[in-house]
Length: 381
Image 1 (cartoon, rainbow, N blue to C red):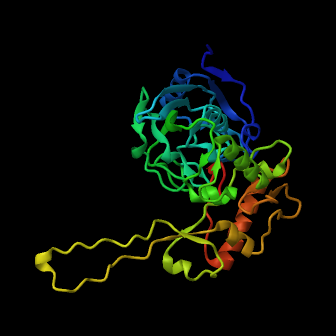
Image 2 (cartoon, rainbow, N blue to C red; image 1 turned 45 degrees about the vertical axis):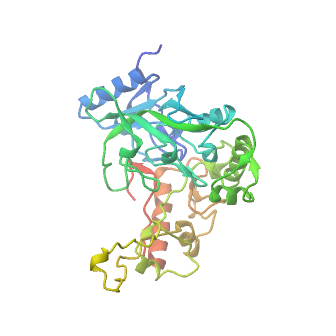
Image 3 (spheres, rainbow, N blue to C red; image 1 turned 120 degrees about the horizontal axis):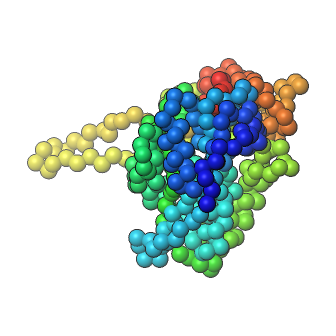
């Protein structure tokens, strides 16, 4: 058993995947759920700023020493329980548990539902905050509930997944650039419900995953096969953290894919990849028979918003993969145009300068200001 330990502060450049950030004034390591709750209650009782640090894979931290306390979530453990439906299992997982270690554990135990999210960096507690997903699987599909400690509360409460306001890579807990989260709280555990399928080969239901893995409809593969192929695909894009590959020293996709109105999307070149934000379903019009006069009104309604590809906009602004400003140690990944990477010793200022340059080029070319995806701490763009 550890005590909630105040430790010598470590520079956040050593604890974040983008490898920037000075040491905070104070750092606390929480190894158990109780220590985490105690550390948070103590941080909230004062006026000092506080930051909860899990895997550090979605943070962009500035060069100035941080005021206040950084609480490192170092909890781990998987508790297995019966599922609510036949053939399912529930797993309650500590917030500090490595996400990819959990995925590997589920594959080893023949449990399906998160195998396509292999190789995503960070912790289990961070996964619901931004509704992580890959290849057609998102955590909202398997998440049952979270243990949540609301800011200022004494004890965590159990919150069903349906109350977390999931959207594409977002939830009510997410800290978006320029705004506060709708619910200020920290996840202490997450409970997933997964299907018991064993290690047998079986057809893959999701078309997006089949396409990514080059599978025919009905072709049967095992969970382990999916995990290995997803990891290989992500490595090819520099999306699996590797000390020896500077392309992976990033916060993943640095810019969000912009969501624009259908009319604005029409001003962009036809080649720009785009996806409707919500399915454009024909609304069903019900007309009472007594009132039907043979006339069916045209369905009204705006065209749905459109999500457009930030990577395409960046490359079409003349900024290629691997681009860097003169004498800078920050560069776009050589593998995909959305990752800003630290090529070794880059400061937050250098990464910010590159981000602003990309924003200005895209704005000049297409009239869109790209918004950052990571949480910015002590950094302005």
